[in-house]
Image (cartoon, one colour):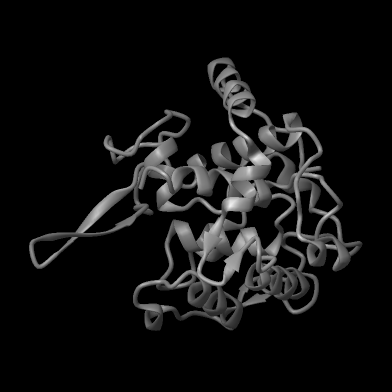
Length: 244
């Protein structure tokens, strides 16, 4: 079970409760699809990255090679721009020596973003993805699809007003192009803290019915049926994908 949520307004807590009651989270989780990662395939690339990055956090630290692997998984535009120091996130930033989440993350989940901002070529989306793979129990990615649906920037896609984070659409040769989450907006990275607490809240109130593929439980990355922040984010991503 993730750390308890904090700092969410009563109106947001009520909206989260209503959303949980009106949506089938196990079905949303099963419907998550990104390239080779489908429920039928047992999300193999996701599990591989979780094992890789969580293991490196507990040993060498999460490296630039790890960041590049996450970028390749996400089909990032212009991955050749990624550069920086060999160690992108110092060892034991996320885990203690005993392998449990660092207690300081309970009330400061966005703190590791400070280190990742030193990696050139990645912004909020991929900074959050690195944390999501480094510690899925406590982190979920903040993808542009989720910001467009649960935050600001795309009135055509917006379904809820949970976040004040904004996504913006780029232009290429005078035509609309891909979306991004600007790192220079005032709500970053504090908006990420709100997102993590939203994921925590869902994990707290959902029944223990997350249908993890067996390899996640067998590898020790999940406790059977218990929702993590990453699991909740996958379900919300699947929901957001209906509108983007």
